[in-house]
Image (cartoon, rainbow, N blue to C red; front, side):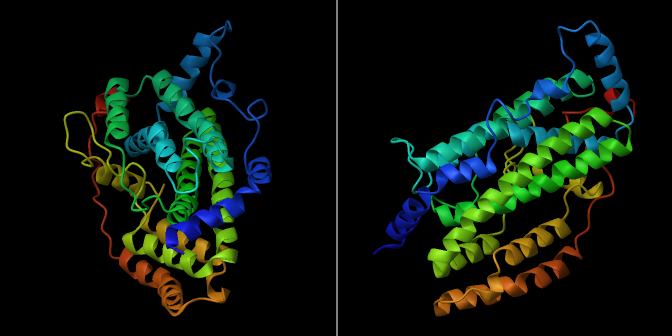
Amino acid sequence: MSTKNVRLEVMQFLEKDIDSLVSQYLIPVETIWQPSDFLPEPGNDDFFEKIKELRELAKELPYDFWVVLIGDMITEEALPTYESWLMDVDGVGQVERNGWSKWVRQWTSEENRHGDLLNKYLYLSGRVNMREIEMTTQHLISDGFDIGTDRDPYKNFVYTSFQELATYISHNRVSQIAKKYGAKDLSKMCKMIAGDEMRHHHAYSDFVDRIFKVDPSEMMLAFQHMMKIKIVMPAHFLRESGEKISSAFEHFSDSAQRIGVYTAADYVDILQKLIDRWEIGTITNLTDEAEKARDFLMKLPARMTRISERLVIPAESQIFKWVEPARLGF
């Protein structure tokens, strides 16, 4: 039987539990928070007063913080790309609805709230160039992305397990910095988003764990493949208006590293957490090739730590069209 057919069989086998997984890891629409829960209510008499307070609290936030918050928001707004990508994974019934398509749609609907909330906050803050941000968002959706997973569900679930934990770290750190500078409402928003991301990380990690139990060798090889090509961020094609594809991502990443929101050390830490979560060191019944893949994975965190320690991040911030210093009073 071909590798693809085996993967389809495994996906069909796991699909029988999808309803319980949805109940365990996703929250009903009527119960989960919505963006309007954290934003000034236009119908209230104190709306303009609340906007003024929001803007005052935002004044002390540093330049790199705004760059990272905007980049995070744009990443969240590119959901049409992420849904269309996941809906094309082998075993996810895009044409004929099945349990996996149900999961993808409901996961997407939860994620969609994140971009909505941050977009509205940035708009109300009056501190950023929304038109430039909107053009970057449109570019990112138009450009799509290439994360090296093909249509392979095993590789895709490794990617989402890693990426959801990375976004948890990013949003949680942004929340902490916002709190430090007194932007308490923004801090709460980002903390709630981070909570969603952690819950989604646990879901995708659970999917991988279940695959390891029924197809350990192929799952191990998929994990190795993703770590060899490296996990690229969803916004790796990020660009500003009039610029070339991917030209803004490195500068955005530098801003995140400078203020400690997401660093090379975090990348290594996530890898180690996944190795521990899936108990890679104790998995049995592996082929010789999969055993070699396991050895590679077990040694990788130490090797990547040595590499990350040699990275040099530019001291000066890149000036983005999204957020001109004059608008922030710098």
